[in-house]
Image (cartoon, rainbow, N blue to C red; front, side, top):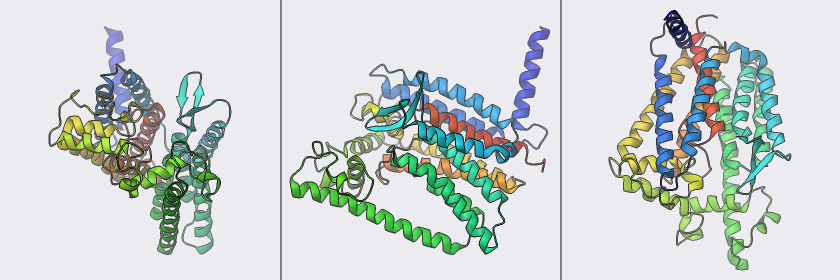
Length: 415
């Protein structure tokens, strides 16, 4: 009995230490509850989407969720100041992993090399690169003396370079979707650091011009196919040889299918198939949904199994839990992100503030883009839903990010 009570006391002490007991705990338990709920929703939705095909991804997701929670607890117990001192090693390690993608251990799937295979353990380096770039960028801005002209521009150049390196490597995989969250993270860090507003106006103008060029390139691809009477499936790579932009044909198809789906795929059986099936799933869910395990689009394969459990997992939620279920999931995310912003406001140093803001922006970007593409208001980019979408690398990184926020909260009174 003494052993049992001893273990119980140790577990209680560990849990109190994780939450920061004795240091104005108040609502520190709320983000952990939100994480557990979102994980449970994801596992159940993955199981439901694969139940007709007897898939086992939901079992793998449980394993990754458990490992992610262990990482969350471990990171929360470490003083986040450790990241300021050693963040460059994390960043260089993430860049090294991105480079290893182009070696024989890189795993090719769906025409892209985005994963590493370590003896059966599949890792996606782009998710680790987000963590490395965030820590490195926040560290640079925390140490810099933003305000004076020379120091301000030096900090801007350094941060943009830190984020540009992983973006380039990720685009070369090619994986344009995974590179998108890096830009909001970088600009959020710069904005919080009180960089002059003219910088953001100029950058926004450049981005609008760039996206306009990308859209025109995608439209030119469609005109090229019509002019030469080519089939998109049999002419892959021809337009890539004459285009000045390093885009793949399937990426151009995704852009056109978002801007003008009736032009590129009038019958809805080509590049816009996934989106149309997603809209059918969400729309058929109605107010309260069809019920757990009673959805049809993913279970019967109309929404392909390759995307139903990750990129379009919200379609499964919308069909089976309806509008109310979707709103509830959004509410849980809102509570989680609001808590992270609250922790940012309580941080006693600049580094903690920047980290908490950057993590909030990562979650918010993934949330908006993923749900937006599911509902047809954002281009399909393959960005997963935090804590819900199937995938080990992203699940673990999300838990590590939330653990950093918890660490900022725990050690907020020690500086």
